[in-house]
Length: 250
Image 1 (cartoon, rainbow, N blue to C red):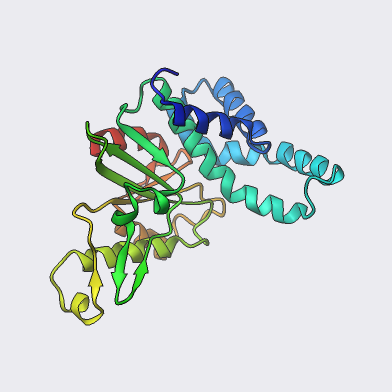
Image 2: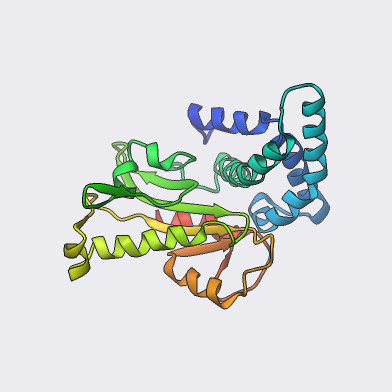
């Protein structure tokens, strides 16, 4: 783990110890062994890993409900459904960085809006108000003086029914804010950062909506979109290509 700093090691340990992540990580490791996959390849099977670990997670929720640790099992399940996806992506990313597959000056954060290096980059002014993207993770690189170099903000969604449109609309707003056009002047749209982030989308497509024409058109607005299934497509990339993408572009 020498490629990770203290904060990254702490993040990795926290994810590993979250009660609902324990069976999910166990399924990740079992899936790798069953199919002879390395960590990068396992990115393509997040859908299967999350589905196959659901029964074990449900058993844990039943136990926690009986022990009085949670009151609303349905609400806990709903919270886990979104958080587990984000935590699993971050876990695999950190493990890949630990083994040297991600450059040492590239980092990942679950709180991009509050990150001191990133917050200005994701803030667009509209009159007296601000607009920020729907983002679950940010992957960024830093310079030798620990200043922000480049950033890739990511919206993670288990399905396309969720707020996928919110992020690409922010991307359009960013294009308006950084170009000369009458719309920018009309609505007093401002952007202070000197560097624009790359904007991405990652899904596991639980409801098989990926080929809906309306959704397919949406992907054109992202700098890169990925899916955690082993699909071949001209409009969305396999998630296993994420490490190469960030190493090449950040």
